[in-house]
Length: 99
Image 1 (cartoon, helix red, strand yellow):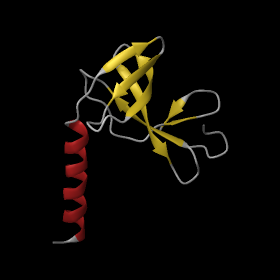
Image 2: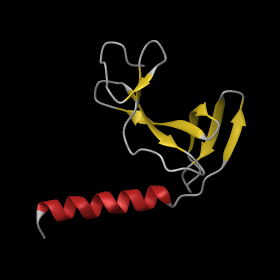
Image 3: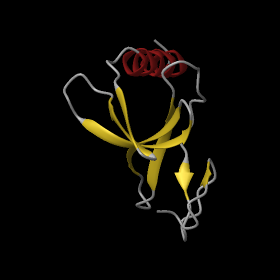
């Protein structure tokens, strides 16, 4: 199997697994607690809009928190999102001011 096909299959498998997890949203003011993983691991998401949340997915090599968009009812972009020191979200990372 060539390398591109392997990468495509692994990517598809990850998307399929993440898209098929149990999901429960409980809104707590401007924050939401989302049970995204069947193992019970919880992540605190930031409510952006009525049905749009940014879920923290971990820190990268520069110690910047990475987020993924989530909605129960609408499709979302599949991209890594960062938050800068002013609280603004962007797909562009600024190492000096990321949270």
